[in-house]
Amino acid sequence: MKFASFAGRITPKGQEAKICTQNKLDSMLLKGKKGIIFGALNEQSIAWKVAQQAKAAGADIVLTNAPIAFRMGQIDELAKELDCQAIPADATKLEDLEALVEKSQEILGGKIDFVLHSIGMSVNIRKKKAYTDLKYDWMQKTFDISAISFHKLMQTLWQKDAMAEWGSILALSYIGAQRVFPHYSEMSESKALLESFARSFGYHFGVRNKVRVNTISQSPTPTTAGTGVKGFDQFLDYADKMSPLGNAPAEACADYCLSLFSDHTRYVTLQNLYHDGGFSNMGMSEIMMGETPE
Ligand SMILES: NC(=O)c1ccc[n+]([C@@H]2O[C@H](COP(=O)([O-])OP(=O)(O)OC[C@H]3O[C@@H](n4cnc5c(N)ncnc54)[C@H](O)[C@@H]3O)[C@@H](O)[C@H]2O)c1
Image 1 (cartoon, rainbow, N blue to C red):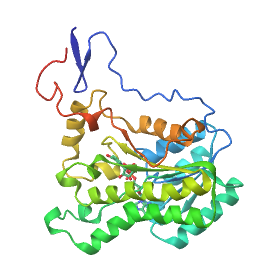
Image 2 (tube, rainbow, N blue to C red):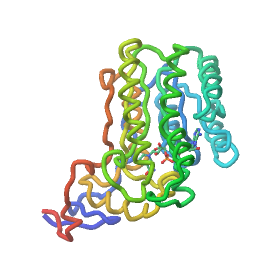
Image 3 (tube, protein in one colour):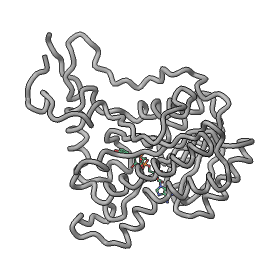
Image 4 (cartoon, rainbow, N blue to C red):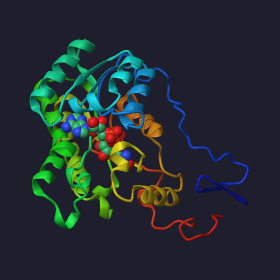
């Protein structure tokens, strides 16, 4: 079979080499469901796409982000577009999370069916500190924002008994939790902690409320958080060439999030689910070896 190259990828000739970004899910997949979505900063944000698609699938949502993101980002524009409310909350502050969960239940008119934690930030990466020379108070801040905030969020939802039965709680992770990416720095440990919190808290939520808790391990994606990591363009390209399906775009990640909020995945819990075009199970690809796939 002959192959054609498209945007750095090789696909069977004659087949259109398009990236699948279409939301083919049932347009009313989340009808009647109420959700809180953390982390929409700008149009590139994965949470931005999730919010747009959740609304289009019939959900009622509340958006939230850190107060500084309301000043620096475009979350108010998204709230206007989706005709929903956006509430500032620093996910490291329990009092902010408590007020957010209470207000969201008032706005949405009942318990919460789904929550997306789409939050990540490394102070040492931002300040360009090498992994062998980290500042530990910055590392603690990174863990607090990127991982402990997930426990704080779940503990707040738990103590307020705010989750509806068969609800779904989801956070976004990266394969740096399992494999070495030299410039991913302390985010590797943040993601390992995040995934562990999903399992441990997911046990309690499952037993008491039939609520599921999972993480999605997403392909590298060009967003503010993603492109802040040194060498991002190189590992974006590397992951794309290594993955049989290519890197999964943000829109496809949003599709997957919706499926995990929906009733079609009621018995999936305590999982770290790879959404990476197959990257996590690859050792070497023909493209990486400079060969043309058969
Ligand atoms: N971009 C990638 O390559 C990639 C790959 C895998 C996983 N992820 C994960 O996806 C998630 C979303 O990131 P993104 O790529 O959409 O980038 P993004 O920069 O658009 O989103 C990160 C969000 O975290 C928010 N945030 C930071 N500190 C906060 C705080 N104290 N309280 C509340 N919110 C806070 C930011 O305001 C921002 O909206 C993160 O967990 C990230 O680690 C990203």
